Image (cartoon, rainbow over all chains, first blue to last red; front, side, top):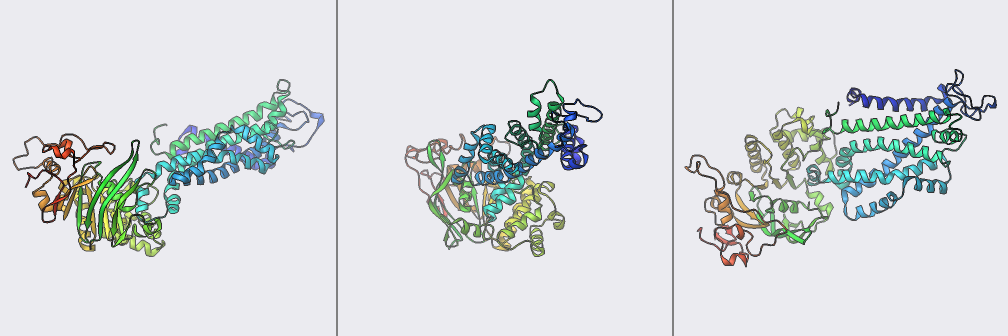
Length: 276
Length: 324
């Protein structure tokens, strides 16, 4: 499979973009040229220069350093909320899709209720109620993705349960839990992985949106969302304040989407080899 | 007492028009070491009968509405899931029509057969591996050690069906239900697989329910035959007499539609039975075969004929007695 990724230019581009962002986030303390929180009124609102590659903001903080540090909350929140959402959502989806009947009804009606709220409205309400903190952000965004994962995995489980090898497993005397874990889950895994990468992009976007609205990562901690919000007032006077975090955000989302597309093609044997 | 005695089994499914019976009052018995062939067209209810015995009718869409399925003295209808699970794979096994889709693509053949032992609490380990190897040898798989490590897509259809049979035989069951076991296979492989089932039946004293739409297979491998049509058994009897002296017009039609070589008939146009099997939602009063029957009488459309003895152990459900 790794070989297959390398053969597809789009897949490779996606993988590289994601890898670069992850490295930036992990190595921030070592590669950021300045302290992202250090104020220096003497160099307020400077345009990009040899000293400050991407310029400085109103408080004289280095935009490049803030941008590198800003990758951390985005990716941390993206990864952990997708992981939590996937774990709970997949469990709900597997049970509902495999058992159907009343189990399906009991599990999926709350899911439908959650799905009926627009993402940002629900997130705003939850964060406002819980108070902005990293943990609350992760929990809120996880909750947004639980019903979405549940829907996708339930559909997959419903298709898989009709297959002969599930009947064969039942005929062999295996219990429902074993059948779900050993026969349904492994065959739904490809779909789950692809869904994870696509939802990762969504989760990062939601985090950026919440930070932009002021209920996400709280200043002075940098995040791409709140950097955009701060730079917005002076978007014509100091365009570098909004341009660079915006570009980072866009590149990250493109990276995850390209990777998701490629994984879908690679993990689905029917599509394998169709697209160069 | 027969190992498996099905009496008056009725299995119904939910349809737009309300519950409809796909199996309607079916009774038969299978003894140890005996092959019962169940023949019928698609939609005749033969597979639903098998699924009912295994307890695999999806409660979302259907249920067993009546009758009893007595297996070794125990009624399987209404048995709790845990009790069924203890029987499945251990005392009753089933093999399916399409071995590729009946094997999980994620596991090697060895792991997959080993799963049956794990399901019944025997754990995985070197001992299980040895037992799996034994099973693969029992079904005459060449190079069993190699096949053990293969994935289903890496081996041929015949090998897959043998692996399925090996899986079904893990605990030497009393009853093997084979639902169209050779429909997806080449003719030469078909014979190999059926000969294998026949040999195992004799060596292991298996009772076999051989479900097929191919009356030729039944002629060769079954001791007794039950012909199903529209969810009912229309004729049943010992294979020899039923195939030589069929009593029901449907059986006669089925036999006439089999091509034969070298009997002078080979150049004749094959005879088909006009019409199609009624769908489950169609309510056919009286005999369900009547609309397609050449010997239809006024009575056929009003009253369903009961199964009545025509010879020793040979029953037919038909008002017309002209065949005798």
